[in-house]
Image (cartoon, rainbow, N blue to C red; front, side, top):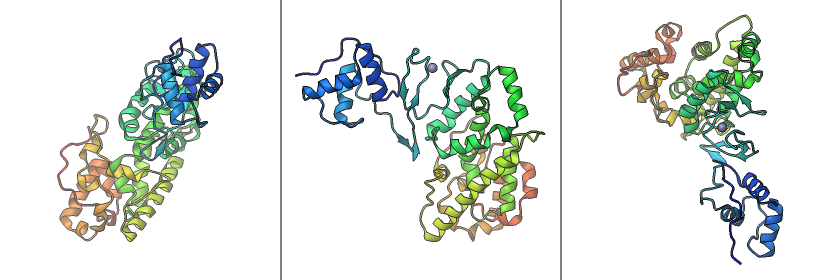
Length: 351
Ligand SMILES: [Zn+2]
């Protein structure tokens, strides 16, 4: 017996998984997925019972006349998991559809919709749309998924208690949106970008960096995201990030001692030391950092070489580009000897 498509066609949504599609397709054809699959088994057209059995995937592609790439959304990208979640209800035309889209953040830009639970309208809050575009351009494309440590840590740093309840209440009153996660999404994306930024990680996760200097640099970056106000507590975000950086520094120190590349499966952040960032108008510091700061693996052994005066001078120049002109006065001299030599002179300044 040959397997034929069901009479009424059902369009599969981008990233939709087989459970969601089979349920919708069966209902549209006045049946259920369980009934259809048991009929297939009776006719020896389906054998396995696994949800993701290749026979089952092939059968439903056939029943729905779908492309062979249907139901192939990855469960893991760059070491970060991709969870199945509800797709935008407007994109799904009001139906409940589940799926995995690794490069999708928490906003459907097309329908300006927050993809949390419940999904809500974001037309009154453009900063969330801007944040989503930044997520897709800088994080989603680099495999930083919603379930990644970077995004979860960033969410913790952008909590209402840290950003400040006064600011949250102000946004709620201004937009009519009550969902705090949606209102603080812009800060979450800024934190996620910070802790995955190559130039930031290269310096702050360096095991030889003076702890006071590391703290000063983190404080400066956090202050740029969460201004100090009566109700904000940016120091708590600083501490969260510093705790992670201390762990990463320990991992890098151990890797250097053993002579292997650093491995941080719990954080999955050190991989960003080896990535090539795309320069963007609001990310000039990335473009200004030379290759010397770009690779956290090999150059760490070059401690003697980096102590040379000309190397220290170049490192000072790099740090000025990364963290601003006035930072250097607060950085102990010892820290600068740990920055690896750049192979080219930065040509662009922060605008
Ligand atoms: Zn949508």
